[in-house]
Structures are given as C-alpha cells and as structure tokens.
Length: 145
Image 1 (cartoon, rainbow, N blue to C red):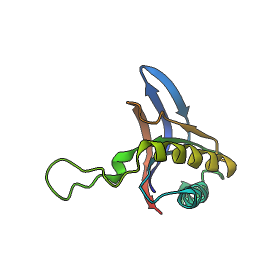
Image 2 (tube, rainbow, N blue to C red; image 1 turned 45 degrees about the vertical axis):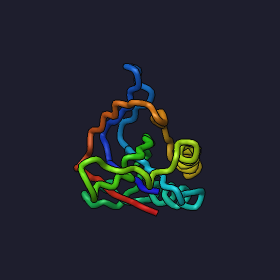
Image 3 (cartoon, helix red, strand yellow; image 1 turned 135 degrees about the vertical axis):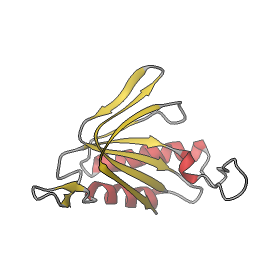
C-alpha cells in the first residue's frame, strides 16, 4: 500500500461538477493499493498517518500530528501510484490491485483513520475526480507498507 500525503490549508474533491469532499487544515492522502495489500497494511498506514508529526508547533517545528491540530483528511484512491514507467513511454499498472480488492481496502483505510479519531472524507473510487489541493509548506510525504 502506498500513500502520498500532502499537508494542506484547504482541499476538495469534485465529481461531475459537484463537490463531494472539502476540508480546511489537514491532509490529503492519495492512496494506492497493491496486490499483496490487506488489513495489516491499511492499519499500519492509518496509525502512522494519524500520528505523523508534520504540522508546525508554536516554535515552527514539525512536532504536531493531524490529531494534535484537530485537522481533517481526504482520502483519494489513486492506482497510478503503482505506475511502472521503467520501460517504454506508457506506464504499466499491473502491480495495482483490481478494483474489487482495492475499493473495500480504501474504504477500510478511511474507517481506520476515523477509529484513530481523525475525521476522514473520501473521493469516489474509480471516478474522474478533480482534486484541489492547497499544499501547505509545501509538505509532501511518501509512505509505503
């Protein structure tokens, strides 16, 4: 499972000209699911992201988590995180899990964030989404389990 995490001042997800998710201060998690991913990877990532200290404290040091700052999260499924562009000019996505496996795991990941106490909204699995991200910092972190 791969997560690209961006600290944001604002973010939203729009599908068919309708905003379906919107947050202020928090994180956008672009989440890719691979063939061998399951509950263990989803749980590890959810716990790690909920407690990852990437928000600034009063002294400007990254010492606070999304829980500490009472931030929110938008989870957006993104199979393209499993792109392999080593050969040719068109990326291969054969390492990404099939939708029937990936969709429930993305939902489970968001539920696990909520269990950690992090308000989590979602994109729409498989939809053509417009994701607006106001990256704060910018701070972008890659996690893989």
